[in-house]
Image 1 (cartoon, rainbow, N blue to C red):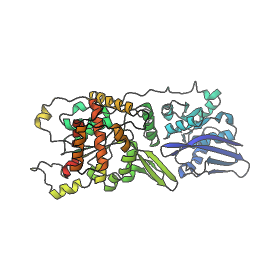
Image 2 (image 1 turned 180 degrees about the horizontal axis):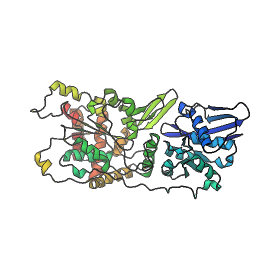
Image 3 (image 1 turned 60 degrees about the horizontal axis):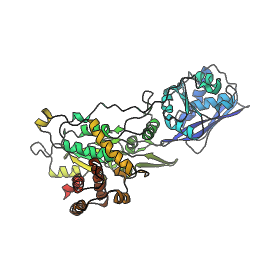
Image 4 (image 1 turned 45 degrees about the vertical axis):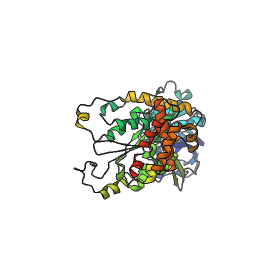
Length: 508
C-alpha cells in the first residue's frame, strides 16, 4: 500500500512544500527513511512507531519505506513526525487516503502520542494556502499562529488519538473541532514613554526625525545622559505595523521559534538590543542550516547597538550590506538563503573609554585614547548613518525640576502625519520611507529651494562629504520638511540636516 501527505520544510524564512510518501510491502520487517534527512528527522521513526503503539494501534510487521520529496531539499527539525505518522496510518488503512488530499500537516510526536508545538507554522500555513490546500492540521499550541494568516482553515489537535478521531468525521469535523477565531491586530502596549525623559530636547527631536523617515540614528554623549532611554522609546513613536508588515515580521519570528500560544503574531515593531559580545554570525544569521540573526529579527523595527565601539570590528562591519540592501545573503553548500533585514539602526556611544569626556576634571583619557576609541567605527559605517545627535550632560534643574516633555502618543501623531505624506508621495513605488530613496529618486522627490542649494553646496565643499553623505542629508531634510508640512525643502531644513552630520563637522 502507498500513501502520501503534504508538509513543508523551512528554507530561510520561507517554507518549501514537501511530500511525505509511505510505502508498505511484504518482506523483511524494516523501517527505512530517505530524502536528504537530518539526524533529527531520522529519529522520527522511533518516535512515530512508539507513539502509534501507545495509541493502541498495532502495525503488522511489514517492509516500510518513507520518502520525503524533493530529495534535494534538506529536511531539518521535528515538524515531520505527524505527517510521517499520518502517511503510515493511511498506508495501513487506518485513514482513508482521500481524507489527506489538500491537507498539510506538521507537528512533533511524544512517545505517548501527544502532539507538541513546532516552529515555523505561520509560513507553513501560507505555503499551504499558496499550494491549493484547504486545511492545515497543526498542534493546538500553534493553532492561533496558523490562523493569523486568515487564508486557510486550521485544525488543532492535541494527540494522535484526537487526530484519528477527527479523520473519521466529515471534512475532519472542522466546524466542531477545537478552533480559534482569527484575531485582528491589537494595538501594541508599551511600558515606556517619552514623557519620562526630561531634557535632551535636541536628541528627542532627532529621534522623531529618525522615526518619521526610518533613518539610521547615532547618539553620542557622556555616560548616563539618557541615550539608552531614548533608544528604547523609539518604537513607541514609530508608525504602526500594517497587517502585511505584521505577517512579514511574524513569519520571521515563527521560523526563529519566538512566537508563543499567547503571542501568535507580532503587532509591535521589534526592538532588539544584542550585547556587545555578540558574534558576527549571531548578528547577521548563519549556522550550518542558516537561521535568522539579530539584524533579521529587527526587520521593520529597531536594532539598537549600545556602546557600539565595544562591539567587535567584524560584527560592526558586517552591517554594511544589510544597511544598504536591506537583506542578508548567506551561501552554504546546500544553497543560498536570503533573509530580510530592513531595520532602523540606532546606536549609542560615549566620547571616550571612561565615558566622562568632555568633563576634563573627571575624564582620565588621553587624546590618543579618545581618538582610538572613536576610530573603532569605520568611515563606511558612519557614512551609512543619517542622523547623529549629541546628548549633553544634564543640569540639576533639568533633572529635579524639569517639566515633563511630550508623550509618545503626541510624538507618534507627528510621525504618522509625516509617514502618510511619504505614502502619498511614493504611491506605486517600492518605497515607504524617505531613507529608502535611490539616487535618481532623490533628484526627483527632494526639491530644494535656491537658498537651500547654496547652503548645501557650501556644506559639501567645506565638510568634504561623500556622495552617499550628500544624499543622506537630502533624505533627512526631506523628512524634516514632511514633519513641517512643506513640499519644498527650505534652507532651514537643509541647515538642520547638515547639523546632524556631526561626525563630519568634527573632522573639519
